[in-house]
Length: 350
Length: 289
Image 1 (cartoon, one colour):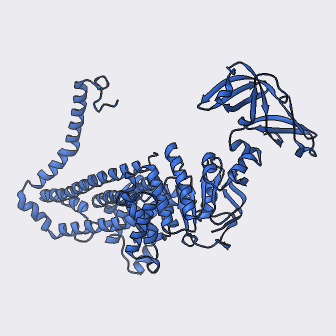
Image 2 (cartoon, each protein chain N blue to C red):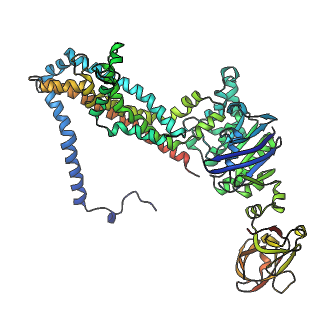
Image 3 (cartoon, helix red, strand yellow):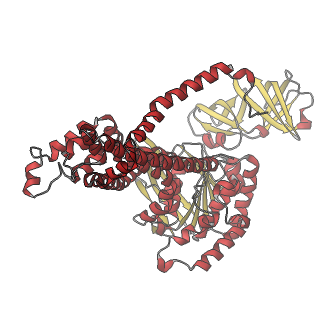
């Protein structure tokens, strides 16, 4: 199902949670709404579901305006961060709930409901727990039950609010892959909310970066990472060193380096910010052109990768990522020349 | 490593422990157990025959019936109102919510006698609605409706007060999940909300019924003490107590009221135990892995 979000605005008293958000989601897509807490991503998800209403704007599903339709007409599946399983019902009853509350004339017969529940429990590999109760299961198992329960009503769209937020790291990685596989098998249009960039990057077809109630950037994970559209995206997705710079006639100068920035050729001279990814910062033990002189503060080597923290006058915090075997001769205190290989220049101070 | 036995250096010396426990036991015995035993002892001073004869007295029998009727009426009404109030306060946000919360506590703060007087002022012959009521031949004060109203007022907070923290802790996620799955308002209430609060509700209802049976002050003001008509058990006991020669009968009725209280206490203990178990499960459920 396609979802079209047009000019959604939502205010809570004086706080603007969403400010004119537009978003198109294609049929069968798996989209991540990524942003820091308080950015409005969960509010947006709840508005798509119909759990909250927007102050302005509209949500269209398959070309139809959802205004005025009830929650049950929208046919969405919603997975809550804390699962929201019905604690007094068995797992089978939980999964069957959406089917058993249908009006009598639309309700499948008992045997059909049971068959459907078995099928779903098999899909999430938890057939054995049909007669258990939610409190007897682990967090990861509960979250899968919550997914099965949402899928039981054959929703047109699946919405997940921080689905793995309450789980420990290992279970989270496992469930991530599992969700991706499930999506590939069912092909159901899905939107999930996360504050974990790694999760968004790994699972989603497209990432929507949300900040302060606005969309900063929409794109494929790799594209968002490689071509951040705004300083916020630069800092939020992946690590980035930032330098204050001055742009003069298409050249950004920072830390004694003159970096060509032809796209700002026509703009007036002024302050700018330059972002350099830590793995785009090459370190040399002898002087090279286009580099700034820094001192090694600390070297953290974990397996094949090393993080080198640098100190340089006028630079708050700076680090470089390089292979562990490239750190020989970089004991703390030694001078190195750091040369940016790629950089993003944004006008204005951050 | 955790050891279930408290280390020696963390406990008080034996004589301190035993004297504190002894003090508590003496206090409990003097103030709770002894009076209860005395009530039953006094009731049986003239033998079992007189004891049971006290309940055969038509006025006593009527008082018992009226007390049970008032109890059932206020438990049913306050059950419905209490759930509605707790539901409104915990699942919705609206203007004047804190005012409503304060109002719910009003019966706890106001003296029962004043509660009774409020109803006399409202519905009594000289009251605000008195003439209208007498024109339409409706009797509230010095009649059963007044007693029910006064008792309901006194016992109103029990159910709501018990449910609000439970429903607040449970939040609205399960209800939202049910709604997204297509359940309508009533279905959500019967299948999700009610099962989740049932032990708390029962606990509130038991407290409410215990208080309803024992209410004296407010009922005393509105009842008019008409024997065989508007006398509840507590009022009946007072009348007998003040009448010469009815001493044993007064205590017989008092023992019955005490017995009813003990039954509710046992029920309350059972419900508390079940509730604790349900809460332990819920706590396990909301534990972050």
